[in-house]
Length: 196
Ligand SMILES: O=c1[nH]c(=O)c2ncn([C@@H]3O[C@H](COP(=O)(O)OP(=O)(O)OP(=O)(O)O)[C@@H](O)[C@H]3O)c2[nH]1
Image: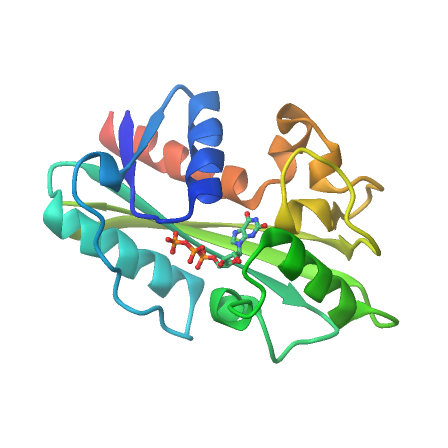
């Protein structure tokens, strides 16, 4: 199957392409088919709603395509009032992956290091949402950035029970822990069960 992704985030698009390729599906950015358009502003309410709004926005312009959109965020146990569904906005002052990874390390310095990373992926067709799935990962924030296979969050997220960050693993090793992979597997299973 081919999916069109409603996103402007190049790292996210690349990761989704790698993940969907594992199950023999293809992902192309919507900008391969349309000129770049500004998405409506994200809400503060839920990942599901933000992902659905982006998927619907592009699905209305490309009704025959299976359009996916992802909304992700990081919640820190030590800082429950920030980040989470507002991650993109709360990190605006830290524009590079290195800057926001360092900021997150500072936020948990001397505190509880537990995190929950969450992704919702919405899939739309003919201007309607057909499924929203999610994937979560729990673990600890590393005390320094570690690893070279990925930037930003990947260098500081250590899945529960492990000692390595996601960026210290190969893509194949990290796959079972990726929130986008966990969500994608649910989406593909749903589409196979309902549309074959
Ligand atoms: O190192 C990272 N690895 C990731 O895997 C990841 N996923 C999200 N983020 C960060 O969280 C914010 C919310 O992201 P988000 O889902 O709202 O997407 P976005 O606004 O970047 O792109 P779009 O898809 O909406 O165009 C983004 O600004 C990024 O700072 C990530 N950082």
